[in-house]
Image (cartoon, rainbow, N blue to C red; front, side, top):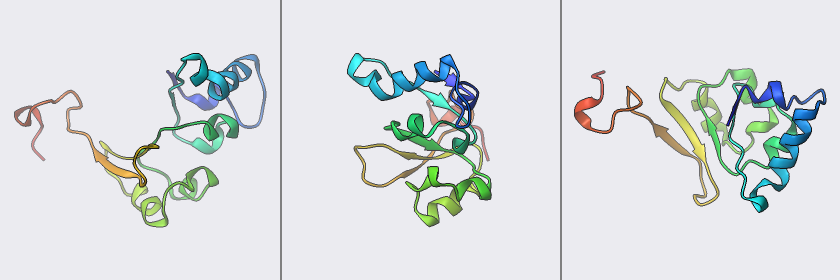
Amino acid sequence: MLDELNKYAPRDSSNAIKEMLLDVAERGRSLGLILLGAEQTASAVEARVMGNAALRVVGRLEPAESLRDEYTWLSPSLRERACLTQPGTMILAQPEVPRPLLVRFPFPAWATRSSEVAAE
């Protein structure tokens, strides 16, 4: 799991860590490795890393970022929706479901029972 993926696999420069991450992203599944990367701006991450992602999750996006090519998997209406989402709301795309899903996580995030969810 890597947070701030653009620091380790930046689009515009190269380093040894980026080369290892590209190897994991491109060949990792066949070796039993899974790369989980998190980034606020997918457009700053190496395209080959992003292109090999099977699971994509988007929270709130800045309008300019939502127009980038990395978000073409979102329909125009979902791109617009992603610019307006509230904390705890995400759009999830994965291979088993043909369309992205809007998912809302309870607050606090650890809540597993209705009684634990904070009132809105």
